[in-house]
Image (cartoon, rainbow, N blue to C red; front, side, top):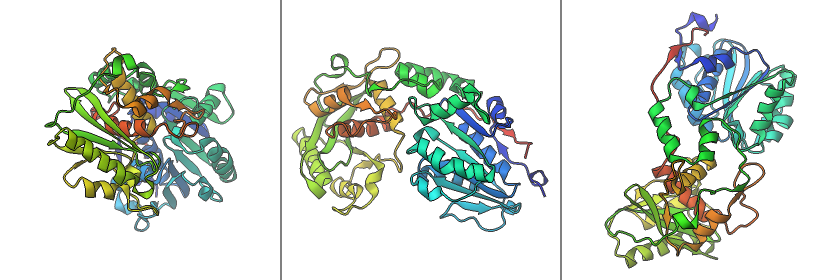
Length: 426
């Protein structure tokens, strides 16, 4: 039996996705702007493999991303009579009646992927793979060479890292490789008004990278749109308005910040930076936040933002999230279940510092010396990620600010028009 013998699946594919799908290159690399539809392409490629025996892997940067981006949508998509047995929800594996074993995995621990023989690898968000070059060359490629397998690697630019290196192989005509570069605007389902809004709100370099699929030089200052002239000025806290409290959950120093939204402008009123609090770091910073709010007679709502990884218990004490819920029992919980992309946080902060149209929305009180130092001094490392090693005093306050800004002032969550078509190649 072949897949065309069962009820067809409906997915959203447009001409650019078809162009990639129809290529017979062994290793394909797709570089796109955000929301172009690369993960939809990944799903279509996965479903097509269900009719052929062998092992197929979908790989994402983290376990949670693999579940959210692929496993849950695929489980909802496929017909029950395609399956040879009940799917393994824990391992995120399923077996089809045609002999295909499909598994969703993360590359957080690449050495655990050794010794297998997948006949196809679908690698999503390749730019964010931890140690991506080594994972591909030392772990995955040897397996594919042994199994005579193929690979599709998709992602959005992140400076000139391993995604760029793979993309360049296709551009140079290396045997077996093909690559494509698609801007967000080339996808027919994108709302053009929304895209224009993003252009007005985002800074130039972030817009080119995120929506024009441009490889940008990210060396130098991460928060290059910030300036004391435009973004530093005295801030007062309105006691009746919600207070936006953000944390990074670092141990030394323990950090937090108090912000507020004035109209369409995010403002930062005070920062907290406490040293040598040990296992009580989060409690100490939260206590100081409470004191600062009492000093101004704050009676409004409190909204909590921070690192999603703080939900895990620690050897030094209770989970950071548990501490905050204890100390702010009536607060609105604004911490996401998983962290946004680092570059999304940085882009969101740059966008409120200065947009492409020259709007300067972010205002920081001059007393926030640590946050100002962060925004002026945090740089990108050679791999395109924030440099957290050169100066351990930096990144904590700006990371916390980013969790707030990317949640309340997002720049990459479009209202897209539906545009599905039947995959009659199934």
